[in-house]
Every structure is written in C-alpha cells, then in structure tokens.
Length: 294
Image 1 (cartoon, rainbow, N blue to C red):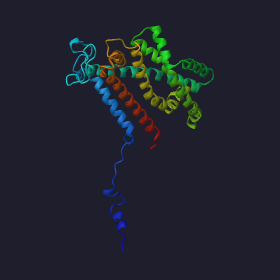
Image 2 (cartoon, one colour; image 1 turned 90 degrees about the vertical axis):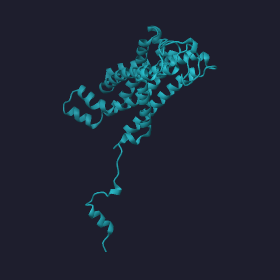
Image 3 (cartoon, one colour; image 1 turned 180 degrees about the vertical axis):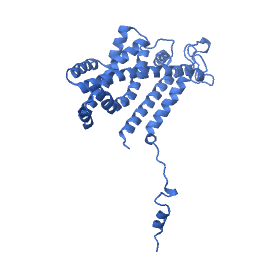
Image 4 (cartoon, rainbow, N blue to C red; image 1 turned 120 degrees about the vertical axis):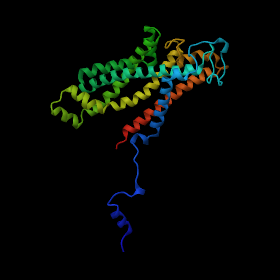
C-alpha cells in the first residue's frame, strides 16, 4: 500500500501545499501598541499640519457676541470667553505643542548622546568632568530649573526652548554612558581596536549604533514630559503668551469658567491626554519591537 501523505509530498516536490501557505507579517505589525500609537500620533500630526484647512474659524479672531457658547454644530467644541472657536484653537495649538515637544527633545537628545559617548568611551578625567556636571544639573528638580531659567531670560517661546534643553540633556547622557560602559568591553570593539581603528571611528560607527536605542525609546516618554511642562509653564504665564493658542494657556484662561463652561478646560485637556497616550503607546511598541529578535 502506498502512503498517501508520502505520495502527496513527492507530488509537490517538497513545496508546501496550497492550504499550508502562510504570509509572515513584518515584525512591526505584530505589536499592537506600536500600530495604535503610531496611527493615533499620525492622525494628530496630520490634523495639526492641516489645521489651516480643517479649522472653520480664525483661532485668534474674537466675537464677543458669541462668547461662552456650548458645543454645537456651528462650534463643535464651543467658544471661549472672547467668542473664539475652541475647535480651531485646539487644532492650531496642536502644531505649536508638538513642535515644542519635538525640538525640546531633539536638542537634548543630540547633546546628551554626544556627551554620554565621550564620558563612557574615553573615561578618566573626561568622564569625571561630564558626570559631575550631570550631577549638578540633576540636583535640581526638572520644573524648578526650567522656571528658574525662564525667570532669568524672561517669559516667551525662545526662553522655554532654552530652559527645557538645559534641563533635559542630562538624562540622555546617563543612559548612553551606562550602555557604553558595557558595550566597549565587547569582543567586536576589541577587534576594531586591534585593527588599528581610531577612537572617533570606533565610537561613532561601532559603539553609538549599539547604544542609541534606549535613548530613542526614552525620548518618546520625554516628549510627553516636555508637552506637560509646556502646558504647566503656559498655565503659570511663563510659556507661550496670549493670544497664541496653546493648550496650557487655554486651560489657564478657562479655569475661571470651569463650573459654568466645562468645555474650556476639558477639551484642551483631552487633547493633551490623547497626545500623551499616543506617545506612550509608541514608546512601548518601539521598546518591544527593538527587544524582539528575528
């Protein structure tokens, strides 16, 4: 008797049968948090970039005859105490807050990674000087240092960029330095030294690509912190100045009417929560993706 399964295998010459064909999805598609976070963040980014076309009203145009109107078909998010459309202001504020979050993380990321590389790879006196400077900056609470710098420079957007950059670089330096202390003892680094490669080449072409991942994952959470700090500074009157739409300043202006016009603080607050959720999911998804091996 002929084994039917063996005959079937010979008939297909070792190829998988049609019923067994399977499509392997890319690795990034296997992480739900990454997909949801990226999709939500992309939606917010597109909405902010197209705010000029989506928003039905000028975000700073006042109409006192239409003040404190509840959400309706004409004004989906209602109006504020100056008759300005909240939906238009939330959309335009998204562009500003996301730009602040990106730039105030990008600059500290670059500075912190470079200093962390120097401290971790070179060691010795260089490491001592850089890490004692890091200890000095981390001795002060983050928000206290930011407020102190803005108090010296004066309130405004430029002062906020400077303050958040000065307060944020030390965390990246610590992360990268710790990773380099482990990687620089690896065999492939010893082999690169044996081949006569100079220190800058080893540092930036062999060490840095293997230690940058934790810093990038941390930056997703850091953007959330920066946006929250921005809103807190605007709430205190030290950040973006009126009438420029910004989520923190919108909440600060609406807190007086919280009991009678809930939409003034609730809807900008929900925008902050959505951005924080998107970035948190994206950071978790990136961490899971980069930890997963093929």
